[in-house]
Amino acid sequence: MKVLVTGGAGFIGSNLIRLLLREAPELEITNLDKLTYAGNLENLADVAGLPRYRFIRADVADPRAVERVFKKGFDAVLHLAAETHVDRSLEDAAPFLRTNVLGTHVLLEAARRHGVGRFVHISTDEVYGSPSAGEFFDESAPLKPSSPYAASKAAADLLVLSYVHTFHLPALILRCTNNFGPYQFPEKLLPLAIANAMENRPLPVYGDGMQERDWIFVEDYCRAIHRALERGRTGEIYNVSAGTPRANLDVLRALLALLGKPESLIKFVEDRPGHDRRYALDSGKFRKELGWTPQNDFEQALAATVEWNRANAEWLERCRSGAYRNYYRRHYTQRRKTLERWQKS
Ligand code: NAD
Ligand code: DAU
Image 1 (cartoon, rainbow, N blue to C red):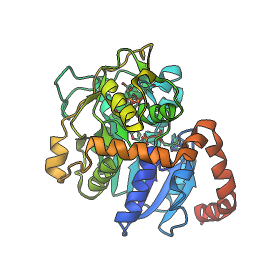
Image 2 (image 1 turned 135 degrees about the vertical axis):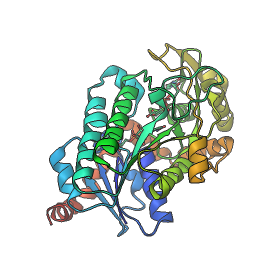
Image 3 (image 1 turned 120 degrees about the horizontal axis):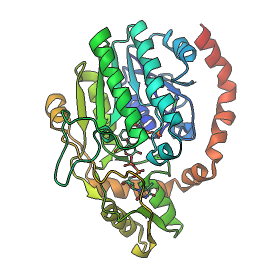
Image 4 (image 1 turned 90 degrees about the vertical axis):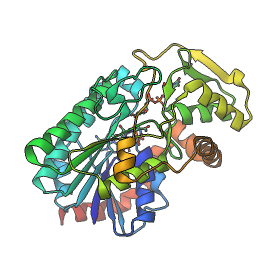
């Protein structure tokens, strides 16, 4: 089965590709990624030479480039490529609209024209906005996005549903909560806090730090995506979550304890504008229909994530300094000609 993964050089995408190559020998994987600041091919260095894996640098919002790639013929698309950082969307929403909305449209069109048999669209819990204390949103909750990022993802979801309804595209949507784990770019709360704490630098906490997020270990989510590829039903929306929301402050305190660092590193800073107080999903439908449950306990997975960042301090440092951007030039210029021949053939 030939699978196109978009955004495979990012955090979830690289974990997903590694898991699929390891656990699904029947899959042949092409990774289409633009390599924005969030795309890092170092994340996949250990699998780059495998015959069942191929990387292609392209922009999902470029119809001609996408068309060239789709001509190779794919049985399924796992669409993860996106601009993903809420704070960046508050600075400049334009790249979010281009990639998350237009890019999704370009892919849907290509998938429709080329008769792709399955399109799994990776969305987010942020499309629902913030539930009140104790409340868990299921898939029937109305869309109420707060940030330009969340609004762009909600727009993409509606486009996907319109392609199912009007063109019978065999697509489905996954809405997941906050992921954490190896290879997460250190702009997001957990890897940023780990990196800062390791250097005894302050951990910025927005507002009062009592916002809740429903953390899930990335490996559990990647297994959920694999399950959706195999068994998800066309036209359905599935929430995916661990179902155990925690306050940011509690998570940071646990992290500092794991690192043996003092809580005095916590530094309260100005709140994020429009900050959603809480994310919490009811993922009962996905669990029941697709027989999935998260395998990893939060505390153990957090400890493993801290350990991974400790053991990969050089990776973290290259992310922070920007040196990771040289990786593509150093390792892919020779392969580029082969890839261009493959694209044209
Ligand atoms: P990420 O920011 O780590 O990676 C995004 C990847 O997309 C990068 O490799 C980047 O180069 C690529 N990309 C960006 N614009 C592109 C374009 N125009 N064309 C091709 N590639 C492009 O993101 P992530 O955290 O791995 O998230 C992956 C997906 O999961 C996103 O769709 C995101 O909305 C969704 N999601 C993430 C989380 C989370 O907690 N990380 C939770 C729920 C949903
Ligand atoms: O909920 C799923 C979403 O999770 C994904 O769709 C997004 O792509 C992903 O970025 C993430 O969004 P969040 O805004 O929840 O993640 P972030 O790591 O930026 O922030 C987590 C919480 O921590 C949030 O309440 C804001 C807070 N925070 C974040 C940063 C970066 C801080 O208090 N300080 C910080 O420095």
